[in-house]
Length: 406
Ligand SMILES: Cc1cc2nc3c(=O)[nH]c(=O)nc-3n(C[C@H](O)[C@H](O)[C@H](O)COP(=O)(O)OP(=O)(O)OC[C@H]3O[C@@H](n4cnc5c(N)ncnc54)[C@H](O)[C@@H]3O)c2cc1C
Image (tube, rainbow, N blue to C red; front, side):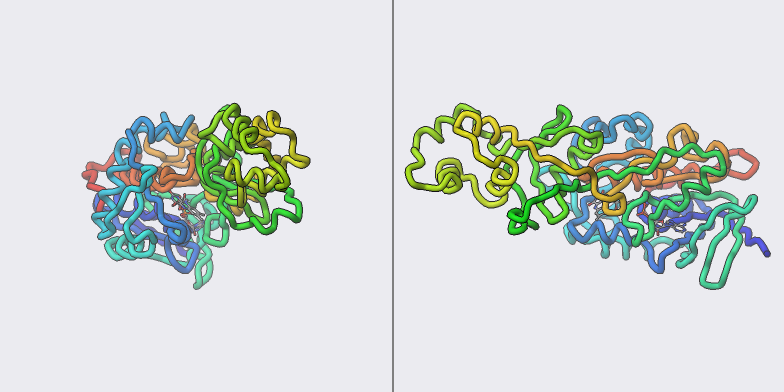
């Protein structure tokens, strides 16, 4: 079979791959982008369905801390392209941004489609859609394409194949065995930012879809105040995602249903207005304002209701038993992938010179809040910049390192 020689290849047209392609183009390389799906950026478009959270406006060290043990590794990449750069980049693509009260930054359009359209329109790379990478063949990369199998031998390659969830959008982690066969160290793919199962009783059905507001959630010594949602499968949403690592490690989840009241205040309120003929539920609604999904959770997790002192303690620390993480494919993102030890400081595979890696397929994880996309863009840019300078003889090319936009 003939082998096509090309200058520079990006595999995977998600945020990381498109960023890598842009930086190689600006450095003067001729870039081909291959994408398994019939269109680019499908997960990015899905991310935009619920409001595209691009990044978080907060002091750099606070931002970096969200990546926990990977913070040190990602520091230079996020210093080169951090939250401010993400905002400038989106604005440069004609998508002005705004910052929500929590510091989360969104495009004013909220959706990803106008941003992706503008991004693709400005990218002078050759796009090959329905080109699925299927592993290595000596020095070449093998693709299944609408015209059959093709072999490509690029001068330099950036792999940006995504994590291992939402496989229908393209990122299926099928690449794991191919990289493992090349001696690349890989950490197992695990869910991140995922929901957890709960074995609800039938009484809970009327609360499915309801947000639980005004609670503080605690697990493994961490406490957050954020909403979460009850579903037929269990619990999901911001408050749960913020604690996903502790919960994934098996920590118990407790809810403080009244984070702004002390236990003593709750006891006093319960005592101040006697229950009389009211049902216990009605009494709790009247004296404490406990209703809706929060009342449903109390009935679900605390039957029979104890007397005032014990009840107050439980309302401040209501245990919600979880039945483990929801399946990997449902997770917003995944942990695991190509480890820090497997790549050099430019994100090039140590065992496969000339192949760089970017985005969610690298072994870092972070909570939702814009941290995911920011690190995908930053690692894509970083890998692209280093890849652009790489020659097969191992010497750096004397090409410039351009700005991120365009
Ligand atoms: C529902 C949902 C909401 C989200 N919301 C947000 C949010 O608001 N903010 C945020 O920061 N993050 C969010 N994320 C996460 C974010 O979308 C991802 O972290 C990000 O898209 C990962 O970028 P990536 O380029 O690394 O991978 P991907 O976006 O997954 O792109 C990888 C690309 O590689 C292609 N590919 C895979 N295998 C092959 C192959 N063998 N050959 C060729 N091509 C291949 C895929 O088809 C895909 O196009 C959300 C995710 C989901 C699922």
